[in-house]
Image 1 (tube, rainbow, N blue to C red):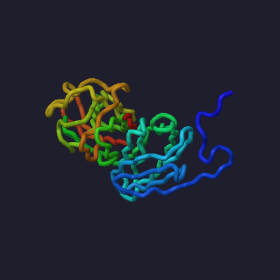
Image 2: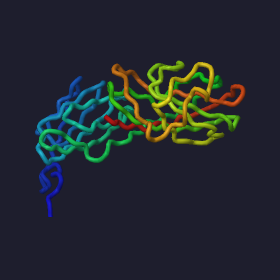
Image 3: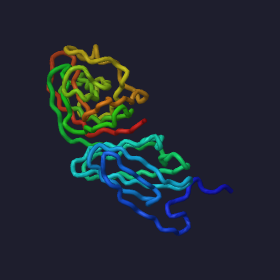
Image 4: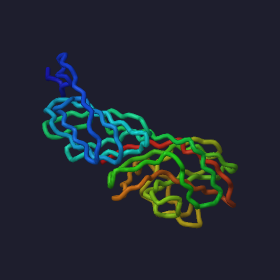
Length: 259
């Protein structure tokens, strides 16, 4: 029978595991020859450079958010699949990589990261975008992401639909990174909402006629701006007839980095 695909930290024969704490800075140096388990506390938007690994060995990176949170981490070309990590202040994420002698390959698929939000958002004007106060994050410049949004919708009319978009442009019409909509989702109906990047810019005065089609799971992805700021969901309503006051809760988003 063939041997293992990789050697666990410590050599797999009872050897000890060496841990190291990385020094925070704009560029973080991670030399795996100094320890198979590394911890870094992010104090800002950072880039990490990995080196010193041995082919066939596994290495563990523990990423901790500081007290502010929403600190991004970019990887160098030596990491082909670049994962995302938790963004809430003080939370930690653990990733494991296997070295092939030159590159460091993420063990398992790129993970979905949950960013919660508990703030209700009320709005009553058709086709006016309202910025959700939570579930926002700062992306890595020009990286591609996939998102899912969890919505709870409370409305007086069953004909009410809810449109959503991701944007870094604030609560304004147009300028969304990507958008999509759910139609007639009804009263108190929770939905997973896949936002699409295949529809056009939303008009300023009308609802469903310019919002495009219902998003599908195949259209989740979007590219972050080259100079990103915090981005997150905005919502608006579609109602047959006059405007109605709607309370919508975005309970959170699932976020996954694609490249």
